Image (cartoon, rainbow, N blue to C red; front, side, top):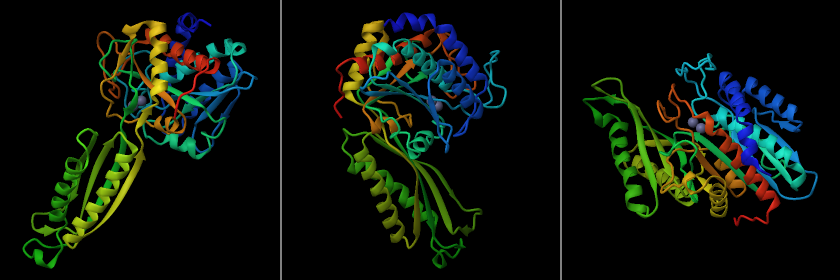
Length: 396
Ligand SMILES: [Zn+2]
Ligand SMILES: [Zn+2]
């Protein structure tokens, strides 16, 4: 099956799908117009689907009718609350914008599904098409998993991709890495409760500002003193809020911080240490604290065998020049990790950075080089086809 030629022939319809989705950009867990569009395209293709109830996640199934493995292909479908400034004629006018290229991910997956349908007789097993909302909130994959999306037609392998200007490579290049690909992320809120007093009489209060000053310095030493220099982790306190006047010791201080790590073990260790240090530093200053771990996103981890499989496939399809092995993981986070935690697989970045006038993802002028989208369709379809037809196992 020559997916490369078929994807090129189908480029215009991929672009049309992307533009149709672009003009109806929606954000969050519920995307009524986007969902209606995806469902109508799946229906036109004759692909049965399951629509989830607790979010607008959709799972399409291509069943070859022959026993075999199941491979999942995932696309995220949501946009951002950004007022578009591209000036293009298919711009979204609602104040939402596909400024991260999820419109292209969805369009490419629909085209890949069409090409795979054409090759259905040559494969055995099933292809699970995952359309996931709320990636930008890092909640869509969790919502889908909570409703049983991982167990429904359980996948043996997962593939997903992201477009944009995420790594400095020319359009059409694929950037990938074995192992940790994108960082884990935790948002942490610590509220320190002291006791308010007159600024001239601190002995009558418990000062949460002095407590937090000590706390921030103590928290900063955890990574430098307790984590191997060969491991990677970042902890940043990014907001400190307290007080209202020059002569009042306030009762509380709130700090917000972000933690980025690559191994689940380091992530768990640091979260525990942050809790312990916060508790004891506060106690040393007679204050009390509440710690909220707002989100707990693991790192996006590429199974080494699956990453090698994708690299080999890209070299065969488009040559060595089309592949960049990333020297270090990205600090951006992605909730595709929920699927990659469940089944081995790989996630790659397809550069769609225009030659001129390029803007980064999440910019109101974000644009993409549509002429390379056929590559994303081909790689997805080819990966699924080879996984189902070849004797391929990714060691967990
Ligand atoms: Zn994004
Ligand atoms: Zn994105």
